[in-house]
Image: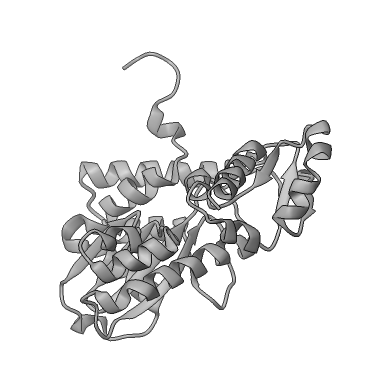
Length: 276
């Protein structure tokens, strides 16, 4: 190929591309060698040599919906709660489990990602008694470009993933070389976001407060709101979830990919209220 321009894998920004293809490719290669390096980095303590070679990887896990198909108890929970949360990755090595919420080209606040992970904990806690997992240790983790300080979950970075994989796979077959190149290029791109201090936004402490001020926002062409969970998650949120959010940020600029058009929020609000 000699035509000048760009390739799609050079500009891809979907987090699912990295969490559902690039990362699982690296984790599973050569009998899960990278998982065997990653778990000690997350759990920090443990006798990992005694763990069985029993691995499980699920991307885009929906604990309630997925389990409801074949389990009557979970179906009842799903009917009552609907979709609580969808972790990007569920990783298990023997009796150790890591649940990952990943961000790549979006830059949520610590508070926003804490909210997401708390919902994931709630969803998995609900279904755990119906699973075969017994005496497991579960760690919830944020995988981001920049580290996050929190007492509620572990924090790892995409650079850690890249560094571990580069160390583990000294001799790299074509597919690993490809995945590492894609990952490294994406990390470089994602590490150059616009300076958050350059965005000006108005903060609302509740959804009702935002809606009340909507005519003024529209007249000032402040059409965007920050929503780190993304469009798919917005379309699955309950009215209670929307009302419980600690705050909403609204701006006249689409600051990053996790700033959505405000009409999407209003549309979801109307949909939920029309069902009452």
